[in-house]
Image (cartoon, rainbow, N blue to C red; front, side, top):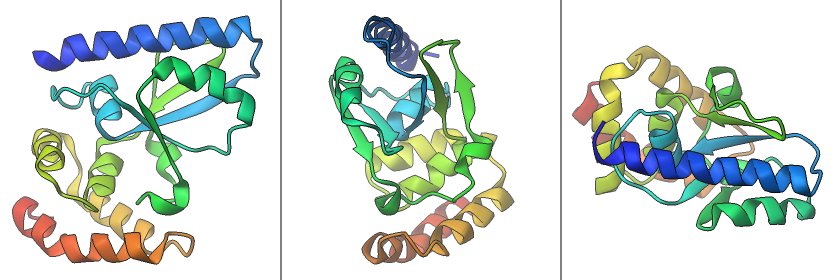
Length: 173
């Protein structure tokens, strides 16, 4: 898959290290949901390079810092500030076979919707690569569900609404 396969391999190695540390510290099993460029690489949705790990904050306890430090460059995204449908977990794909945690990548459709908020050049590159593998009607459903969340910060909702016409025109969604 080009550039992305080496990045993905490095990311998987980091997750393997995270598993070892979780075992060492006897951390209770937990779930982690990757989003953004990390999910694109780990899910093999795109071949764009990224080195950071973006994941959704699942109200982790403070002792999880030891585990997440292994990721080095990471961003834990608050659910309330992330444009997601409430049912994103049902479409997520499990990766790896870890014992100390369950790692998931969001579906391409959920990732695309989460990227509408910015629509920067790197987001457009990812969306361009993923759109052919997506169900456009599902993307529309996810947009509606995400924008109808009462717990989504209004500023985030407005940013998506502002970018929707540009997104819909470019991708025919």
